[in-house]
Every structure is written in structure tokens, then in C-alpha cells.
Image (tube, rainbow, N blue to C red):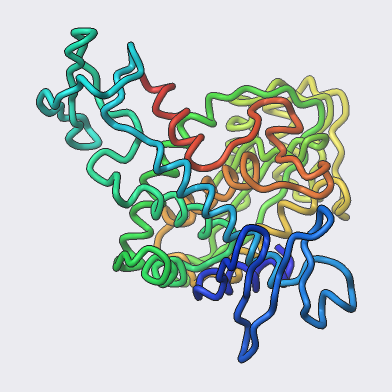
Length: 355
């Protein structure tokens, strides 16, 4: 993420964006206010940075994120736990007991019109009033805010007082839910790129391994380990084969573990490519951004926390983040897997898949 995008998110978290009217905003930055407007199909800001570069500045990014969060609020407001799955109405629906799942109690409803019982399926049972805050928290955390900054934003924008630990619990819960769904999405990939990065956990270094599709930039698989051995490289490829067809080519760095793992797990791959130098144009973006994002966080307290982050970031990167190199599409859109998705859509799709 660029410095301007990151600064824009922080301005939003601080409550610095004020909407004057449709297409017109004031963004407080430092001790000055800057006017951001939508003019002739583009965003314009009166700050020196925009006037010099004629490109998006941090104030414009702050407004864009503000509007994204506004869309989330609007979508969440239309959620209805009580809507009957048969007739699509809620006027003759009553509560009809509680069902206890492994994840906790679930409210049951009964439609007098259809004479059918059903359960709440929004994903926010018991937390409907906080649903937009929860979805916003997921979005902002994986865009670059820390847990504490997200908690501060919720206080400023939603008047919801929660600790950063509560925010983290929300993130773990919904990343786990969505990850189960996206793991079932199969893809075709002819060229894999593999790499790993190091994260600090309680003073120890663990490795986040990532597998990427060359054409779409889609993150196929992630794996967490403490070592760089053959077994770990094999596990990464095994995870990849659960989601993707066998590739024709595999590109890695010069790590010997990859060579052995390719021989054992992908013996019929036509062309394994081992290189000491990474092709940054083809596959460097996700790894560079993952490393940059990790460095901006405090050290992870547990390997489970690192795993949650890696899985959640992969979801964000694949299904939510638009990429300039993909004509402002997400990798999932570019691959033709899922179109026009956000965290709320993914949560609801995950719940539908569990039925």
C-alpha cells in the first residue's frame, strides 16, 4: 500500500472527513482543512500535493475510504434476520426458540404465512446493531490500520466503545468463517510462484509461505511454519493442490527445499523454474505488500494470530483489493471467480455455503 493510501486510511480513522453535500467533502489534515470534490468524472483536491502531481492525494483516498465505509453501512442496514427464506417477507415472522451450535446460540424464527421454521443467516446474530462496525473493522484492519486504530475509529464514527482485543476477536471469527468458504473455490492455474516472508512471534521467527497464480495474481495458498525445510515447502504445495489444478510451471527462489518439494509433490510439472532473483513485475506485489503490512504491526503474540492475519490478508488481497495492474479489478474478478465482492458479501456467501 502506498504512503498516500495509508495516510488516507489514518485520516478516516481519526474522523477527519466531513461530507458537505454529494460530491463535496472537507478533510482535516494537520491544522488545515482541504476541500475534495468530484468534478468532471474525477476527484480533485485543493492541497499542494494534488496540484503538483494531479494524482490522488491522501485527502482523496480518505474520501474514497469514507464512501466505501458508507456503502458498507447502507448494505448492513438492509440486513434482516427475520426475513423468511421462502417468501422473502418478515411481516408474519415470529421468534421460535434457540438452536445451540458449536459456534453458539442461534435465533430461530417461524413464518406464519409459509409455516416454515428457519434460522438467522446474516452472520451477525445477537450483534445486528454492531454489524456495520464489525464489517468496517475487518475492512480497515486489512487495509492497514492497527487493532487500536480500528477501535479508535469505531468510537469516533459509531460511538461504539470496544477494546482492541474485541476487534481482534471479531476479525478471528469472521476470517475463520470466510476462509472456510473461499478454500472451496477452485481455480485453474498453469504457473505458480512461491515465496516466504518472516514474522516475529514472541521473540521467535516464523515463516509465512505464499503461493501465487502468475496470470491473475491470485493467492492460491498460505502456510505457517518455524522452519524452511522440505516438509514445509511440501505442505505449501499440498495446500495449493487442494484449490488449484497442477501447474505446468513452478517459479521459486533458490531455496533447496522447493526443489525437493517440487520433485516429490509435482513430479509431472513440465517446467520447474528455480531462480535467485525474483521477477518483481510478475509476482512481487503480494509478497512486498505482505512484508510491508507485517512490519507496520506489532509482533504477533501467537502463531495462531499470524495464521489468522495471513488467511485474512489473502482474502482481502484476492476478493476485495482492486489492483491497478489488473485494470482496477480484484484477482478474483480478473480470474472470473467472484464478481463485485466485499466483506459483507463474503460473510453471507460463506453462511449460504454452510447450509
